[in-house]
Length: 265
Figure 1 (cartoon, rainbow, N blue to C red):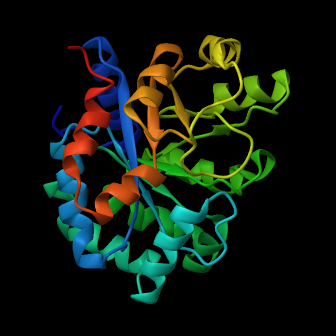
Figure 2: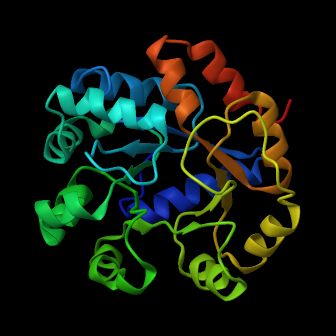
Figure 3: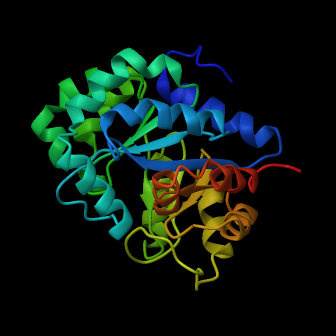
């Protein structure tokens, strides 16, 4: 699909649903903005989009990333050491977003948004062509601080659902989620794992039953086998730490293999 829809939430949801209607599953790579220098951000986004990514999750470097494992933390440190900031990422996307076809999702924490100013952050994100937003440390009960304004400008607010959430909580989160529901497949922080120890089939059936948007599996997914396994029970996957490792070695061949694992032969 081409980005002809101006509403970011509609564009994100239409793009993901189009992928599913084709018979493929959704693949969302995660990158850290500014890892390798801010001048690498647009080429990386374009490379992943051209490789077939359904959408791209862009992490904003932050000094206290509570949900991130070692690989993503180190990527954030590298970006911060080069002076990369939320504002710098915004300003770059304002002029260069049109080069990237895939929907873009920001993953950031609430403190940088408070420092930036909530209204200014959302206004700038809209101008920068951000289609969705994930804030892992913002409690569900406090999300009205930002969701009311996001609804006004048409940016999707994506909910994370953990394995330990109660059934009532899962239903609250999935029904509130926009764009897609981010289903965490492990207990703990992000990072590549050899296997997922828990039978997740029932968990995903429950989430898909109550979610109005696609349900994607994230955390600990790092191999084509993981991608295929999770794609059998979810609508797609999010891959972060492994993508960061592969980008450091400019290994787009394996990135394409991961993406192809979600596609029909």
